[in-house]
Length: 459
Image (cartoon, rainbow, N blue to C red):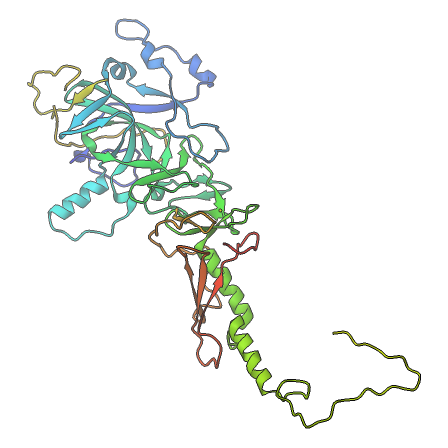
């Protein structure tokens, strides 16, 4: 197994595991006038080396739903070094490695030092360390494939970031962040325009990555997905949709409930709904007042009424009394009283005497170490369960137990509430009274869900 390297690391690392790659990428600003003033490099023959000065444009394959503050797109201008050696190689549409065919524009897993060390540990029966997403193979999208022969096959790629790998100084809206944020899902990646060139022997397997459009969460449960992008030029994250009364992003692994009022239609976090419900319940009942449902309150009232002595005009009153008489003064009048290109196969470089394969078919290697370029670039929902009419509850997702509010709530230990999504009918809140020593009232009860934004009931 070989590893690739896409950013400098502070700690010392073994170069023995690195797959050879002589190329590097440099981002350039096409508007930079200093670029035009640089002296032309000359080849040994004295001719201008046009390739070394060529600036290339890479149109981004990623189009996030959100926006960037500094640039409208993720398109970048770049140079390859050494440029002539790169352009002299043949360009291919695909390559075959260990019997697996990889295509340009496809996603791949790429080995790194951490993933190799984990495999070594597993093979030597050493205890496995706790796994983190940043320890997994890196994920990349292939932009271009070039090869000089079956032993020298390279891919120009854009890196996908695990949220844990967001570098220090990343701009997330008005905040400066680093690493995973509370709204990032367990299988979520971040697209980027961090470009690099790798030796394909460091590729471990194909990857399936989908873009998640927040209004449609289909098919992201079983695959990696991305919704946000990272611009390496400015360290900016693209914006994400804000939901709920708390105005924070949706967590892809947690439940959302949609308001059914046409003029609102806001999505709400399950946890926010539950927190608000518990807050209201605590305000109403406190620590010692029993809960009485409307029905039980009515029954209690009826019981009290039954205990009250009947007046003579009511059914069951004593009949022995005489009818009452109105007393009027003389002359007083009577009164009335009203009451919702081709394929390239890769061979191991150790067989130097093997005959070269034609451009449309070049043989396969075992994976060897990849040495990645030290580039100028930086280091690297939800089941929406709408209760709207004609909407169905989405399939359940794994709950991560994250909350959007304060963890020290005064009602903790006093009340519990669960959100129950009904197959037919509106969602319900199921409450449980945990208080001890409360005499009378309801120990469990249900209430309808109300929108945290507009206040109307969710139907």
